[in-house]
Length: 244
Length: 113
Image (tube, rainbow over the protein chains, first blue to last red):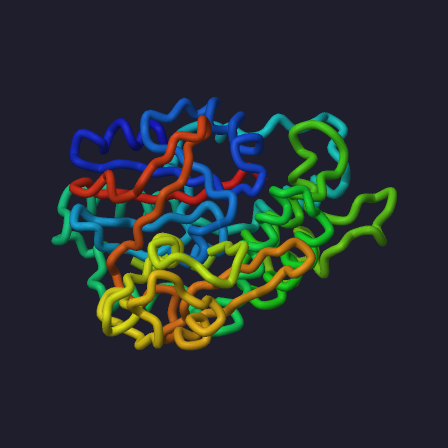
């Protein structure tokens, strides 16, 4: 989907850079990247530096940068390009656990407008700075994520947590992930990354469980989980509405 | 940025934080923050973090610290100039964002979870 878009727009001076936010690094991302077989730069961000640099709080999201290296749209939810026909997805088991049924039901309520987003992207690629969708620097700054001392501190905790996890100190990582969640409550990526490091079951869906294991729910080390949190904030609020 | 010590070489500080050390202090975009040891070869991280308002988080059990991003103003961005980054591909080859200067870029964040 993104590959086809990239092939169409690349001759016009456009490049796609995909960044996999995963503390598990190549081990976590490889299968997805190899399936995509990208022609464009496809990199891996184990410490979620895109959060501190660009304010990424959810995926999928994207920002636009012009030929002079200026951000013209700061990080916002970015749906995949619209496709005709069935959307490819994960292979779901026939006997899907009830939790996954619940997650699919909530996910179905998440809103996105791929037609509007991708029309805007093409408009920018064709018209550059003359596009109404390319924002001036003041607007770019004003639309970027709010940040205060608590949020900054939360980013430091997350970076530490990621490194501790990479070094094999899982319990210490959990402590710092919990602080990151507390200090940056808007970040879905901070939460989902941590939750994904507590896989439940085997197979490709293990990292998507993101909640208490049914056989030992009290062992869950986090305040929230995917289903509880999305119900609390409302799936319809998962993505901020796109504004031109 | 991650630290294993509370003293750091000035070039490592610049590479890790994106701030440039000049005689007038630490500078990024239009902002310069005075530092007592801006011209020294090594910096004391505790004092520097305090002067710049950068959060410093310790993990004493494992000899690690994390120096968090600045919060100047109330937003993640204080400038529209895209901060550069270097990240590895799936084979470990480093990619630098600024290598694409001259093209329009969409940076797309995704996750396998």
